[in-house]
Amino acid sequence: MDPSSYLLQTEAKDFFRKLWDLQLPSKITITIWWIFWNYILTLVNLRYKRVATNVSCPRCGSGEEDNYHVFRQCPVFREIWSSLNLSWVTSYINQNIGEWLTWVFERSTKEQCWIVCCALWFIWSSWNQFVHERKIISDRDLVKKIRRYLAELEGIREKKLTSFTERTHNQSGETTSSTVQFDVAFNKRNYISASGLVVRDQMDLLKTLKMTLYENISSPFVAEAHAGLEAIKLVISMGLSSAVINRDSKIVIKKCQSQEIDRSVLRAIIRDIQGKITSF
Image (cartoon, rainbow, N blue to C red; front, top):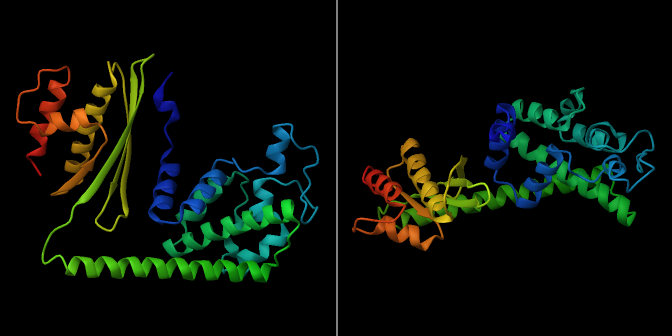
């Protein structure tokens, strides 16, 4: 019943903050999230679900197929880390995959984090191709694919940066704002709500994530208003001079923009929002 029991520890928060900041394709980010929480369908995990009985590694046959074996112990893939000049990542002896990834990210540059994440995604993809399609990809070919994909991502990033630079030059001094987007969940049985906020800069790069829990919330509209106020506070705390705040609650938005005195149950929250808006 204690919401704080579900909060991430500081180390995990730092890891995920770095992961989101890498701006990797969603397919890779989601896969890393699965790997961190040991949600991938290894044979050991399938045995827990009583789907599989034989859990020996289908590639090397020298151990049980869990996430530790797939990504760090299997000799078929250990050579990949060496070829990518990252052989040190396999020296961590703790078998907890989340702690291993946190340890790797703490000691890696941003470019090395890119390589690690892409390598994990390609390793797991090639593993599935072998298990389900009996398609074998050699270590050398897999390393080539990883490096080629990293080059493509770097090219896309440079193209976006060039496009943004040209766009800002064409705006003749017009200033752009950061964007705040938020969403709300409301549990009418327990009168509890939660809001999630995302702040992105002018280049659409992720700057801040925040989640807030509220108790004794009487309606979804109150939850929306609280989340709007939280968004305003976050913008002020970040020291932003301007921001675009996006939300799909038309009722709350109209009340915030209205010059008339609000007389609904939201009036106190709306008054706080309107008062704080004037500061930026």
